Amino acid sequence: MVKKTVNTETVKETAKKTAEVVKQAAKETTTVAKKAAKETSTVAKKAAKETADSVKKTAKETSTATKKVVKETTEAVKKTAKKEYTKLALKETYIQVGGNEYKETEILKKVEESFLEAGHKITSMKSLQLYVKPEDGAAYYVVNGEITGRVDL
Image (cartoon, rainbow, N blue to C red):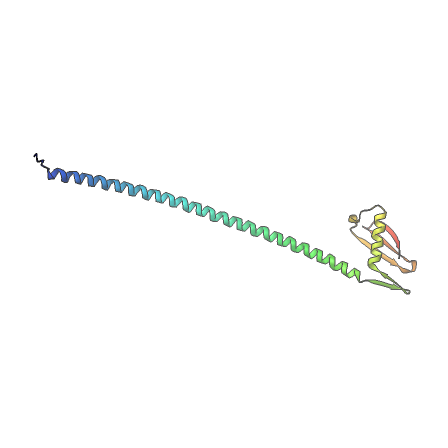
């Protein structure tokens, strides 16, 4: 049987060198991992900031658009309400003279029919002055300050 002699110094030195190599490799791995983590963190922070800025911008634009729509709708409702109030007020107006009674909405309807029969469009009517002369049994009108006409009561 052959006995091999192991030199303890060589083993110790080899172990020491191996330990140094492992230690150096661990140090390099740690440095690379820290650098990768830092880069990932920077990218994540940048993405989060961009997302937050985008959300803020979208929220502001949405808020502005919503305010505009609400304002326009409110104005439209006010205009419509004012027109409807005027129409309602006219529905209850009567003229009583010499034992006769004339409802203003009926007179206005006759004026509109006469205006249409004359070849005009009702949408072109921007203003209307109405003169009721019960003694003539007629109502005279002026549309848009230019077009005149007469209807029988």
